[in-house]
Length: 359
Image (cartoon, rainbow, N blue to C red):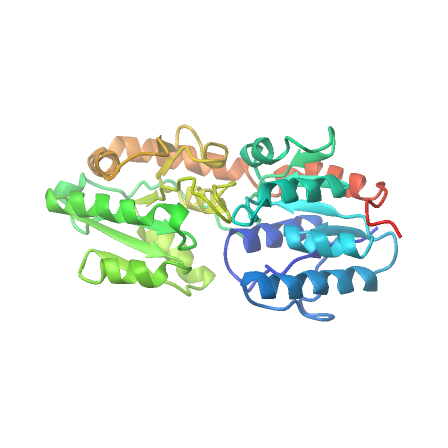
């Protein structure tokens, strides 16, 4: 039986959820289709309450248009509401705390999860955070994996001499949506400290988002920090390949997607052989290899980050070991490796009873 992924977030839209959905559909092909993306009514675009309401109603229309008995996979919570309003059984995918900035948001979110026939979380950390009110046996974890089209590189064997003895500079890369919880500001401050101490360092931040203008103003006078957006997949691969280290320091905040669920960029960086500097926030320990990443406390300050960057810059052997570990980690974390879990989702999605509203 065919499953239908109901989503407003699919390529060419960028970001972790988009990449998750793309990998999921490819791994489930030809069993999973994506209505509204190339065929049928396209989803309404936009953010905010108004757009979410339109998208919820779109999900209801799409659900009603599909044959009865179809497996419905709701990619985002408000789309799950649309499936529920259509009185169709649905599987709810959970990528983070998307309702945390609404009054009683988590309570309402947990109520939605109880209406789904199965809740699928992108990390153990997200499951532990949100399943207190869920029914026993009604959830599982399906972590993102690398698609087979994602190239896996070679260990960074061309790292060369310590940065103090070579050109070009120690190149740090951060790739993510530009949101408050990603920790860009303290990373920038840490790189400033490194530069002020004489370390030949550059930072490249790739992404777009709500604090993009603010970050642009912050780095406007820093010649060793650049901010890019709108990169193609090929350009993003080049960005990974040109870097020496991948650094991203998320922290938990209040509101909306308040914590790091998994972070597929960590897998992508590992696939290119990059040592990783991150925090232990949310699902990051699940998304990274213990031997390929330095995980600081979620509450770390700029001085701790700067010290870690100095260590990585000068310890070539450590970076090489981390690079090799991450290549192996990436090869073990593909969507093919998730096949059994995907089969379990498809099986459970076919046998549940609707929890839609009674009339």
